[in-house]
Length: 56
Image 1 (cartoon, rainbow, N blue to C red):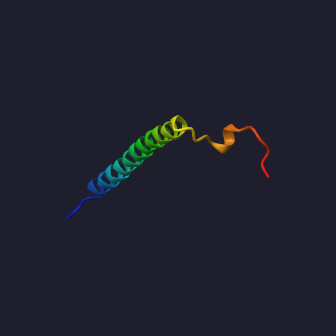
Image 2 (image 1 turned 30 degrees about the vertical axis):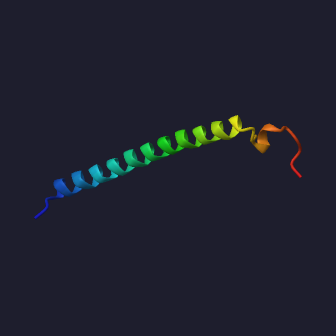
């Protein structure tokens, strides 16, 4: 039988692990996207936002 304290501790632990996992996922994904952008820019493909033109 799970006590109230154990239930609360397990809930907080699960929430903390979920938040840490999400932070790591966003961080690693952001690094991957930056590397992809750098590779595209090296290949001569530029972002539309870097052109400085008007939006149609």
